[in-house]
Amino acid sequence: MKKTINTITTVFAGIALALGLTLASCKKGETGPAGPAGINGTNGVANISTFTGTTTNSSWTLSGTEFNATFNVSGITSDVVSNGTVMVFVGNTSQTQWSALPFSYQTLQFNYTYAIGQVQIAVTLSNGAVPSNPGGLPFKFVVVPPAMVKPNVNVKNYAEVKAAYNLAD
Image 1 (cartoon, one colour):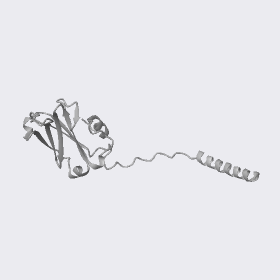
Image 2: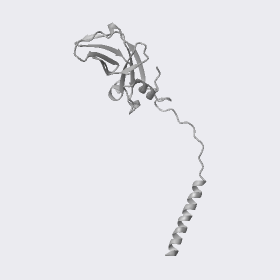
Image 3: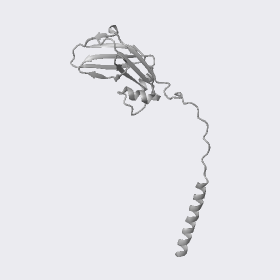
Image 4: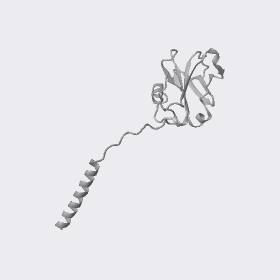
């Protein structure tokens, strides 16, 4: 029994020594050349587009108890409608602060719908009354094609969307 244990110990010691020498002699190779740019461009956001537009009093049409304004947004394709997303933000007059739609302030509510090539903004009052004409307001539209949709991004926070997709102002 003692001889068997000594033999097993010797075999394991030999394996450990051989493995140790092999791993110690490994060297990291040189860094290879950079790979080609991906299909979305070098910064990864080539297919994301942003558009801005500002309404005027005449941009809005009254339909029942809501005012609607329509923007033409060429980046909204059938692929975006089917598998991507469109985010809309309303800004302050100096366009230094943006709030995601849907957006509510007191009884005033902003919402939007989109289709190929356009976004429609709807303004209503939560009490069902007819709101005043919203007038001149800046809106920002972020069009995200299907391959660029990122999980875990708070789309209601423009600063987070801007950072996640590396968007310029």
